Each structure stands twice: as C-alpha cells, then as structure tokens.
Length: 110
Image (cartoon, rainbow, N blue to C red; front, side):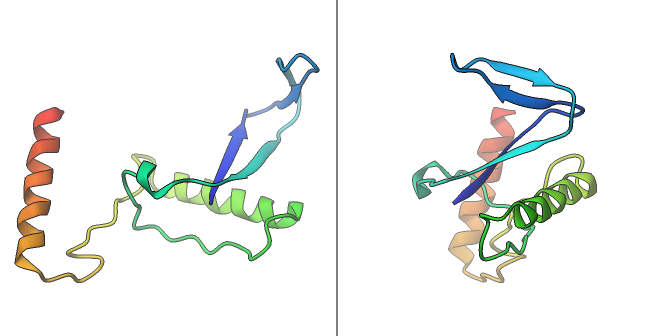
C-alpha cells in the first residue's frame, strides 16, 4: 500500500460534479491508500515510518501526514536511499560489484 497525499498550502481542494478541481481557502490533505505492484517500485528509502494499524480514522491519517512532513523537513534534498551493503549488512562481493556498476551507469545518465 502507498499513502497518496494531495496538499495545496493554504487551500482546500473540492471536486465538482464534472470532476474539475476547485481551490477554497483552508489547509487540508486528502489521503488515499492505493495498491502498488512491486514491479513499479524503483527505489526504497532508508527512512522508516511507523504507521498506525488502522488508517481509516482521520486522527491516524493526520499523524501520518505529520510524520511525512517531518521527514520532508529533515531531508530537504530528498530522503536517503536504502544501501544494501551498509544499511542491510550484506557482505556478498558479487553484490558489491553489481551496486558499483549500477552507480556508474546512473552517473553516466546524469
């Protein structure tokens, strides 16, 4: 599951009958929990958030929003990615070579 947030600072989104978005004056976040296939995940962060077991209540969703905002505040340049060698303690030399090759290819693309 992925928590999807729509947030417009200083405003509230309202959806009309035709599906158009209208902006009103209030802070609000709209949450949706959507299923995601593993095949579409490209990167995993090293940051871990503890989520309430039930996200149906507004208070629980608000606590998740505050957690996400705190992470964004602490990491303004983006959250750190999970490193399989350092963060997970994998010692396989073949994996180290593969990670180095991936980093080299990504560096060339930039």
